[in-house]
Length: 197
Image (cartoon, rainbow, N blue to C red; front, side):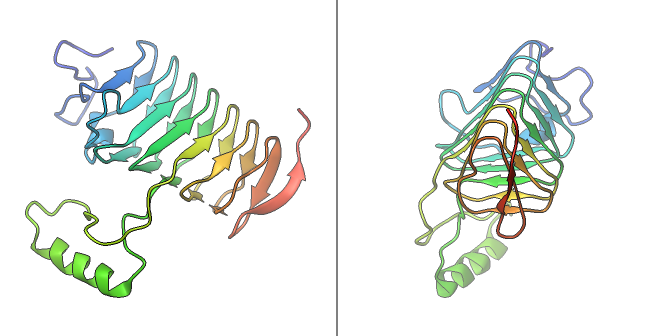
C-alpha cells in the first residue's frame, strides 16, 4: 500500500507515514494527515493490524513515549487518540467518529500552572499543541478489548479498561472500567445491561 517514500498513493496530504508506524499490508489509512500531531520516538509508536481501517478525521496525537496498538479488522473513524503512555485497541473493535481516547490530561490540575502554560503556548513558534511543563497527573494506559464498540462523541479517560464485547453508548464519558459484554452510557458512563455472548 505504501510507496518507497512511505506515502499513500491516494493521499491528498503531502506527507509520509512515519517510519515507526507498523502498517499491515492489508490495513487502510485514508490520509497521512492522521499523523500530523504524531511525535512518538518508541521503536514502534503505532501498530495497525491486518485489515484495520483508519478513516478521515482520525488523529494520532502521540507524544515521544507513547505507543498505540490497533488490532486486526479494527475500524477507527474520525477519533482523536491522545497518547503519552499506551493505548491498546483489540481486534474487531469499532471506534466511532469524534471519539476521544486520552491516556493523559497533559495539564496540571493547578489553575495557576494551567494559566502559565496557556500564556507560554501563545508565545511558542510554531504554535504546536500544549506541552506539559507543570505537575500534570501521570499518563495511565487505556485498554479496549476485542469486539467492543465505542459510540460517537464518547470520551475514554486515563486508566480505563473496556472489556471484550462491551458497548459504550454515544456521547458517554467513561471514567471507570467497563466489564466485558455490557452496555454503558451517560456522563459519567453507567451500567445499562449485560449482553449475551
